[in-house]
Image (cartoon, rainbow, N blue to C red; front, side, top):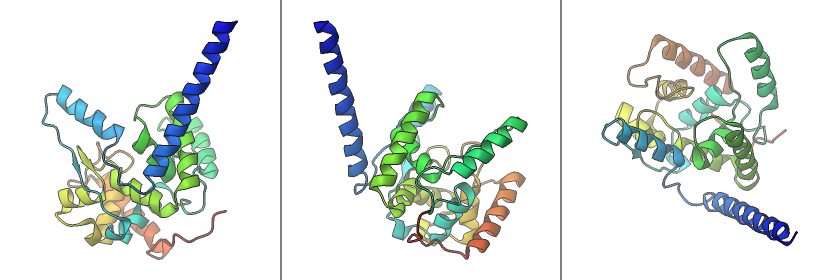
Length: 234
């Protein structure tokens, strides 16, 4: 019985420490640029295992130095209720479930907040454990970060090519310019590859990617060309 109690107290302490650590990390990254993510490490290891040169291009930029066109483009492409939801888009989840019952081509419903939580703290391989932790960190960042910070972190750590992470590195790599200078067309093209940035190319877009780019441009026009972060949540 004593051993059981000691084990229970030990487990409780471990859980408490992990919880405090997770909250601390979220608070720190509310203000501090993200130096590295688990995904960046995993991709670098994969490159070494495949006997390839390790490529890791990333340059942190504040949101004010990232084109408003790109901010709008990723919302139009990935999460059109980003400014309204509290981390989870339940309408999109319901639609995805209905679609996946009827189609072999599965559709996801992860929000920008969920993607940010996953890319910042977790690993890419799908599992119930990762999904549960992703939901936990999504709640934390929605509670402790404004939408602008979620967008800023998202655009600085997202994978946009083989070994290329973040808007600035991708803009320099694919277009030879700063992220602040991206045009609507370039921003829409970058957003168009986000479902699978390792399979779809920004530098050499396929007809499918070009089609998505056109769709994103149309959605951007419907939005009026700009995000307003002060929009009230539902």
